[in-house]
Image 1 (cartoon, rainbow, N blue to C red):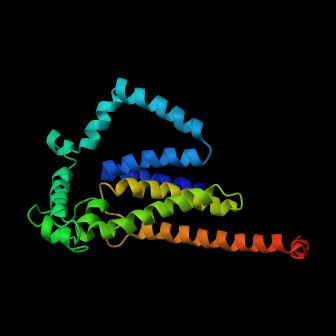
Image 2 (image 1 turned 30 degrees about the horizontal axis):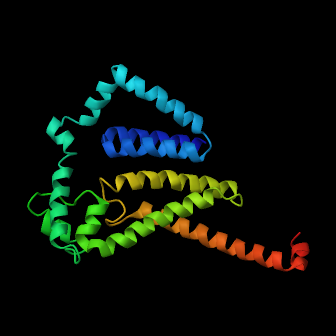
Image 3 (image 1 turned 90 degrees about the vertical axis):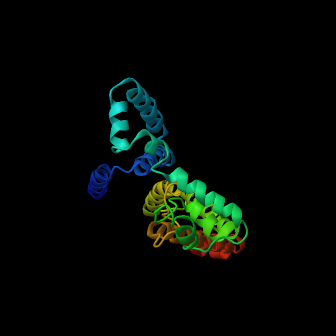
Length: 231
């Protein structure tokens, strides 16, 4: 508990100092997801019910908005820090090369963003589809769906140890943030996607463990003598 408390405090301080809107949004959604899977749905519902009126009908809302605006103009805020302009250009370039793309890790930077001075498209989905077209988007979507399916399925399994269940719940929380960030950032496709690869490795590790345990249970079921020995 001490470790988690210190980690939470450090994360809160760095997030507040960074003033990153996507981080706040990802954390809010991830907190609700974690509470749901942890069986604390009541807390998630009551927290949402109490938070919404407090933001709308008190002075907290304008203060939060001013803090998240980060001295930007209204146009900059509504354009998501110029992301909408970059995404529009990226989509047009994709429509010009719908089946070949412009080159992984290079097309968006040198063909799309060279004239606007941005280092990336700030979206995993646009980066993939502009660079590698639909052929790169397909495995990206499959891997994302596969990871979510594995994490949800195995977290609900009764065979998990308390340590594995806790780690899987943490992976679900982090994966929620990464999934949300994927629409406004490039954490899963840019060098080096450490958190994404860690969760991918954990999902594969859990899948192989469950497969091995299922094989053992099948063998025990088919051989009553082994069942007695196992007992």
